[in-house]
Structure formats: structure tokens, C-alpha cells
Image (cartoon, rainbow, N blue to C red; front, top):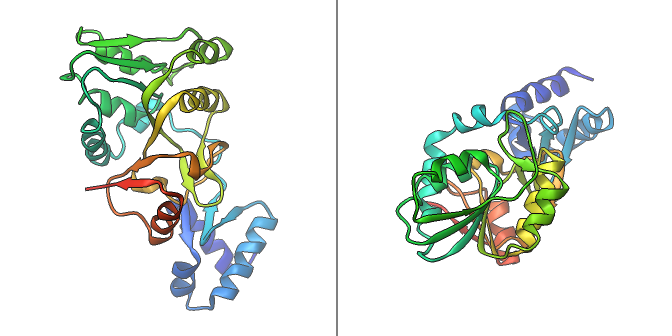
Length: 251
């Protein structure tokens, strides 16, 4: 591994994703040279090439604990939650997953009338305790320590009979090739059944999730109906979502 390739890994350790164009300009070399570097890094399992650039492998299976996620990018999550809350109608039936973005959303839904929420997120259940206007349906299952989510075959079976208007889903990463990914296979199984039984799948994702790939696949991008984020997304994603007829909502 040469010095430039080592520095590429250093950039990835800070940003998780880097585009070929950025690296070409940063090192003042051709994009072809950068592509050869990325191929070398992928061959030694130091990074993974994705559409338009490269992602770090170090974060693929390392999921930050829930409390850490809940305290990061708070302003961005509040922006996303505010936009998402406007889409939720009184008397509706929605599903919220285990993510910290879903927790930010439910805090803005406490004023809704006769809203039914299907969730396996213990943190969301706690918020709803003192709001009788929110009907909460909770599956059985195994509690994930530190994460506060219910998982396992019982959870999936319980949710298989629940159909909702909207499923608001947090994700670990969104990539043009890998699609929508997440860290935990247990949580992925729950997200998949929620998505299968929803009329509309809405992803809640801050700008750091674009171009990022985590451990396991939830679904391809064409399965999504809408993505809500905190700012304009990269052009490559905007063009892809337009082609796939996936709506994108940001301030």
C-alpha cells in the first residue's frame, strides 16, 4: 500500500465515504489513478468501491449504541422529524422502527388525534405512556440490550399480521448499488416485515447516510416511496431517485 492509499484510508476514517472526483482533486492525480488505488484497497479488504467513490469497511458491522445515536446530529434529526410529522394524519396507522430518528418523530406526534403506532422500539413506547390519544401496538420478542428494540421470530410473526398506512424507517446507509442497509440482521428482519406490510415506505436519513453501506441489506432503492433528509442530497442520488420515482423531501 502506497502513501496515497494510506491517506485515502485516513480520509475514510473521518468521513466514511469519498468520491472519486474529490480524491482526484485532493491528490491532484487523474481519476483513473484514483480508481486503481481504490481497486487495490478493495483487493486487500481495506475499503469497498461503490457508485462514484469508496466507503470505509470499518463501520460495516459496528453499530453505535442507541444512546450514542440519539445524542448525535440532534438538529438534523429534528428537521427530519418535523417534515415527517406533517405527513402523519389524525386517525392514521403508522409503523415506527428502532431508530433514533423514529424517536425524534414520535415526540412530534403526541398532538395527533387517535393515531395508532406499531413499534418494537422501547424508547418510543416510553414516550407514548402518558398520551392516551396514541394507541400503541407492541409485538412480543427478545429485548436487545442497550438498543431497546424487540427482535426475533416472535417479533416478526407478531408484526406479520399488522398492516399500516406508513412505515417510517431509519437506516444505517443508503447506497446507489447496495440500496438501503442496516447494521443488525435481527433489526433488518423486523424492518423487512414492517416494510412488506406498509402502503408507503418512508426513509428518515440525515445527510451522513448517503453513500454509506452497512452490514446487511434491507431493500433496493426502488422499493422506497419517499426519503426525508435534512438538506439537498448529492446529484447522483437525486437523479437516481427521480428515475426510480422515489420522492425526496428536505427543507
